[in-house]
Image (cartoon, rainbow, N blue to C red; front, side, top):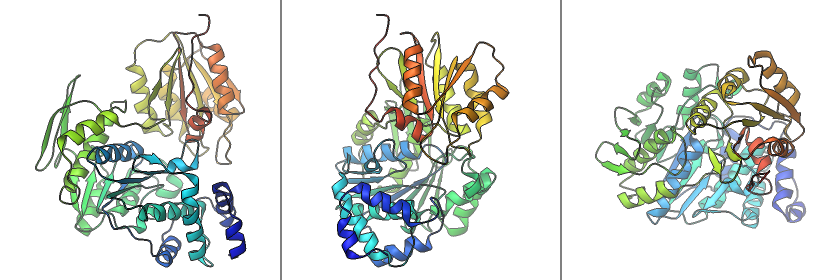
Length: 436
């Protein structure tokens, strides 16, 4: 435990984050006992409705759409998401605005003062600090994105009024189990007896349905309790007691966003007694929602696409979305990933679309090296017309892609948050065609 004099010496957010990194031997250590002990000592509690969102893919988009609609309905919102792309403060938004670093400092100090001899991981410490800020911010609704899994994630010390589970796929298997059923059971840990459990996966693991029934959750299944349909111009949603017709497509691009949006509307419908929203708020919120790094297309030449797809399911969605964009003479791909990822299916999905690869190292010990990524790609690539290079950092790889690309080409930056964040470190790149 550090003394009071040291607490006062923590003058900046970077000081606190460095302290959190030193505090615990493991970056990730699942379990609620440590977090719950400290939260109780802090008196941490929410007085507003809480929505917790778990799942393999679609969590960030779901949180962003919930926030956008609630803001349009006039509510004061708080959102916690992780990880961040560039700056730590991105992990918390209050009333639609990223929090200022200085606003977090007293809450880091509060966690430190309350933890005593408890050794918190980086994720546990920072999550408690952000939830402390949110709890003190006079919110109408709090939206919490689960960091990893669900059952043993720090966010799960809060009993959510509504739990949303998005799509389930194979990821973080060393922590969550070897198959969708095991992973689904971990995600289902955020469900609560008698409270809405929104299951947005079209083919959910049976383990989620079984656990929801076991504890007596109010389960909403896509295809049974809510559904959607659409054509090229608009889409419709129907739930247990409400319908929306002629909705514009969400501002977040990609075919998978309709599944996320359908789960969002089910969550809001399930909370209508505590958090009523009208049809105009739904329409405006979906039309205005923004989320960097999720099939984000940046205007300019060549075309730039940014996507934090980093597991087989999300990369398959990215590939489908890229395919739907139409023809580009050459597609350049900047890619970096963690060493524990199931790389073969990701490379296989993207292979037919990519004409030039730029593999990059990432600034974290968990990352695979650019040389390893290139070797794994070479072991399975069948096209003879595709070239690849390795780079020491995402921005270096990106600059190489820009230098090689023609105006009509496309550059896709995807993989880890570190990959996309590395390209966004100086803001969103504005590309202008060369040779013009």
